[in-house]
Each structure stands twice: as structure tokens, then as C-alpha cells.
Amino acid sequence: MANSSQRITADRPCAISGGTDCEIVASRAREGHALRNVISVDSGLIYVDPLPVEDLAQYYREDYRVAYKGSFVPQLKHVLRAGNVAVDRLGHAKGQIKAGQRCLDIGAGGGEWAYLMKTLGCDSFGVEPNQGYGSYARDSYDVEVFLGMYQESVFDRESFDVVTLFQVLEHLADPVEDIRRMSEYLKPGGLFVIEVPDILFGGMHFKHKWHDGHLYGFDALTLEATAARAGLKKVFLDVLPGNLYGVFQKVEDETVEIPDLVGHCEAAKAQLFGGESSYWFQPNTYLKVPRRLVQRSKEYVISNKIDSPRAILDHVYSSLSS
Image 1 (tube, rainbow, N blue to C red):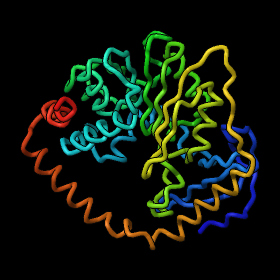
Image 2: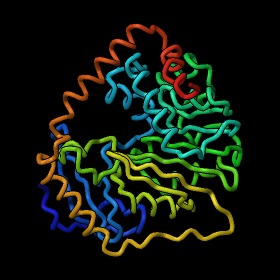
Image 3: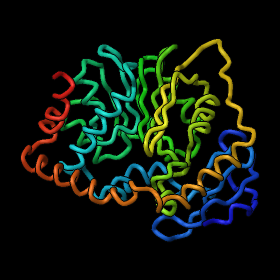
Image 4: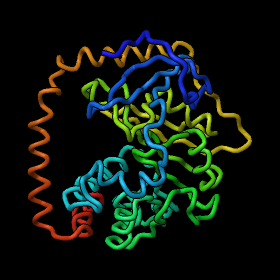
């Protein structure tokens, strides 16, 4: 376990408080190389310090998908898996996403969510920096995906009802500023849907929480505070197994209250290190492998039986209309 009492002055300021008074919570990445993660004493936000990659735009444009998926384009099993995840995400939205809305998915990946929105009757668009995955989405599903960083995109400001950001925010160097800039795409009153990993989830091995791509580790309170700093008002925020799922609203002429973070650093550390200690006493720890084997077997059968990505997603999404 990391020496949680080691106090340092971070190279990077906390995105919420702006302070640099931190404690080290982890010193190595899950692969074993040096990677320092710190927790802000002021806010309890956990983040990588210093940044492990200098040119993030190039990293996500060229290297990230291959590093984490082992492929420049999605394999059919990945399409199937992502399609099922997209259906789950729609359910988590609790009816906030409806047919007829204009939707923008930032970090669209292989396009599974954008195609789901199109299937549901939404005007659907995406942004994806990785050329392989973004081109795959456009070619496979006939959805409009801008290839590049969101800052470079050509979409009109205040033209979308919904912006989605799934498993992306933790990869960004300045989450408050990035959310603020992404919110410019939303109409007043529009919804911003954010999903990130839950850094305090006790069902993940402590050493597996840390890797180069995840620059921030959010919990429910620090995610809400980050969104609030960017001017977004919480509609709801759910703690799911392993993830946080929040729906926020762009408000005008209203000051968004920042949640009280006094004492949160100590509470977050207690839960983080408590999860490290209790991991091996949880039944789910020993059920992961057999469950994963069953899931992978099903994916293998279906992805070999249906030979095109669009047909796979049509198969998955057909359950929504039945």
C-alpha cells in the first residue's frame, strides 16, 4: 500500500481547488513502471502528477486504441461488447435521452453509441481523435463522425440537445476547462451525460487502478464538483459497479453550487485504502474469471455467426423495440 501520509507539493494544481498540497496514493502503474498518483488535500480529487505523456493529442490520435485494444480498428467481438454497453448506458439515462434529439458523442470510439442514437431516431454525430476507430464508425454505420480532437471540430455551438462523454473525462488533462468548452455545443438547458470509472470501487484490485491513460480518478463528489466548476448543474449522479454515471444540465443566469469538499480527502483515502484491504474478502473477486469466460464465449459465438459490425449492432439493438 502507498504511504498515504507522504505530503508533497504537486507539479500540477488540482483541477477543482487549484491547490498543489497533495499526498501520494500510488507510485506505480498497473504494468509496474513509475507513475505517481496524488490526492488533493483540499478537494480529495485523485490525479496523475506529473503528466506521463507530453503530446496527448498525438497519443490519442495514433497510439491509444492500439495500446488498450490491441487493434487499430474494432474487432467484431469488441463491437458486440460495446453495443451491449451502449444499451446499458441508455438504460442508465432514465429516459432523459429521447427520439428526435440532436446528440453529440465526444470520444465516439467505434461509433456504437452514435449508431444507437441514430437507430432510436436521433440526429446523431460523433467526435473521435483516433483515425482508425473514427473512420470505422463512419464507414460501418453511416454516421457523421468528425476525425480529430473536439477543439478542432466544425459543429455549431449551442446546436445539440445532448452531449455524451463516456469513459473520456479521466483521460483529459484539464477536465474543468474541457467540460466548459464542450458545453458550448449544448443548447441552453441541454444535457451533458458523463460516465467515468469510480476510483473508489472496491471490486477492482488496488494495483490495477493506475495506468498512463487515466489522468484523473473521480469519485461521486469530485465528479459533481468538477462538473459544477464548469457550470453544469447535477440532474442525477449514480454510483454503479465500477463506474459513475451523471446527467448534468447547462444552465444560464444561475450560479451552480460547488458541493462541500471539507474533509473529503480523508474520507476518500479511507475508502480507497479500505477497498485495497477488503478486495480478497469479496465473493465477486473469485467470480470474475468464470463470469468473464462465459461472457467471452457468448461473444465468440455471436461475433463468428454474424459477419458484419452493422448486423451485430442491429442484432443487439433489436431488443429495444421488442
